[in-house]
Length: 100
Image (cartoon, rainbow, N blue to C red):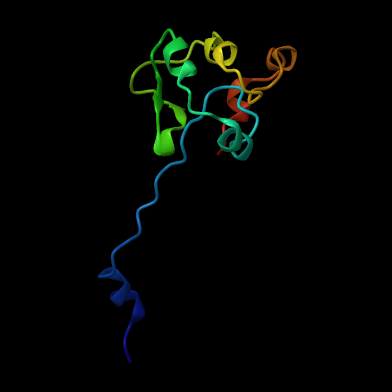
């Protein structure tokens, strides 16, 4: 009888990639993907230059470039209704909206 545990040792393990870190105050991933026009306004408005185009051209935060100061420049530059309302945004911790 073949020990399947040993056979699994030689199989290639599937690599999983971490989900993209979206901009603070994005309401949910599906709405963001459906509504983002990939115009790049949020990329150019970020004073920290930590927003970059990710997979599919959608913006994501790259913390290797720096840190987010939660200045909301990306929110203000976006013409699409993708972010929490400004009044609501002051009551919500932005990182509570980040997908796990």
